[in-house]
Length: 414
Ligand SMILES: Nc1ncnc2c1ncn2[C@@H]1O[C@H](COP(=O)(O)OP(=O)(O)O)[C@@H](O)[C@H]1O
Ligand SMILES: [Mg+2]
Image (tube, rainbow, N blue to C red; front, side, top):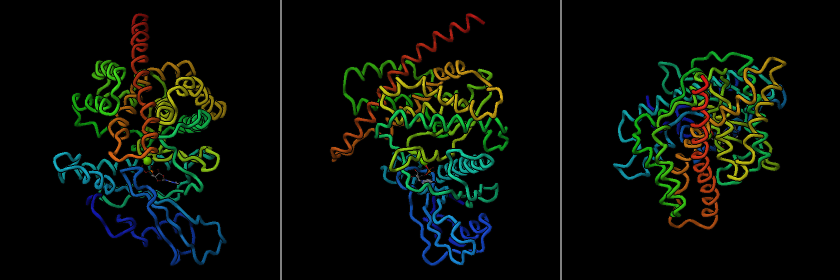
C-alpha cells in the first residue's frame, strides 16, 4: 500500500468522510453529526511535501451541547502526492525518485515521521499553555496498517505562517524562544518514553548523498550571486564541508557532552511557525514530524536563521538563548535546572555551524532560484533570503574557527 497513489477519500487520500466523522465524534464524545455543508480545503499545498493538510468545516448538526464543538479543524494526512507533483515537474533522468522501490522507501519515511508527530502531540497533551495546537485525535500507522495514519488538530484561527522571505522582528523570535523554553521544561518534568520520540534523528534524505553532491549543493549559490566576495567565502566553506558531511551532532551532542536532553522540534523553520495575522504574536509551533531528543538551541538557531536578518540575528543570539533558558527554568516548578546558562551558550556555538549548514544547504538548493520571468516582488524576496544565507555562511566560518580553538583548549585541559 503506497502513499503516492491518488485515492477517493479527502484530498485524494485514503481517509473518507465517514471514517473522519466516526473518529472526530468519538474523540469529542458527541452524538452530533456532520451536516450537508461540511467541506474540506487544502491548506498545505505548496508549503510542505509530506502531507495533505485539510481545513475541515464541520457543520455540526444535532449538537445537543450547544456550540462547544470546534467549527473548523485541521486534518493532516501523510501523503507523498505533493512530492510526486514536484518530482514529476523535473525532467526524466533528473527526478529525485524514479523507481517503485524509491516510492516505497519514501512511504516508510513518511509513516515514521507521522508516528513521531502523533507521539509528540500525545506527549505534550498532559501539559497546559504550550504553544502547540490542541490535538483532537491522532492515529499512528501500525506495522500492518500502511495507509491509515492521520492527525486532527485545532485550527489556529486568524493565524498565518511566518515566511523565510520576510525580515521578522527580534521580538517575534523572543516569543518563540520563551515558548521553546516552556516546552523543554515539560520534557524534563516527564521522561519521554515513546519509541517514536527516542529514535536517533538522522537525516534519511541525505543517506545516499556523496560529499561531491553535498558540496555541489552549496556551490550552486554561485549561480545566483556572482560577487568575488561570495566566491571567496564559498572557497572557505568548501574547505570545511568534509568536517560536517553527514554530521549527526544534532542528535548526539547531548550524549557527547553529558547534558540531559530535551525534546526539540527539529524542523523549526519559518513555515512551521504560525503567528497572529493582526499583531504578529506567536500562535503555534507546528509540524512535529522531526521531534527528537537533543539540545534546545537547535530549534532556536533554526528559527533565528530563517526569520531574522543577519544583523538582527548576530546582535540577538545571546539574548535569545538566555530567554529560552529562562523560559525553561521558570517552568520547572522549582526543580533544579539540569544545566547552566553558560553551558547552554557553549553548546550553542558548537551546534551553530551544523544548524547553519543545514539551513544554508536547503535554502540554496530549494529557495534561491528565480524564475526567468520573476517580478519585482519575487526579486525583493530573493534578496532578503540571500542576505540571510550569506550571513549564515560567514558566521559558519567564524564560529567553526572559534570552536576549534575552544575544543583544543578543552582537550589540553583534560
Ligand atoms: N493547526 C493549524 N492551524 C492552522 N494552519 C495549519 C495548522 N496546521 C497546519 N496548518 C497549515 O498547513 C501547512 C502545512 O502544515 P504542516 O504541519 O507544516 O505540514 P507539512 O508536514 O506538510 O509541512 C502549514 O504551513 C500551515 O499553513
Ligand atoms: Mg511544515
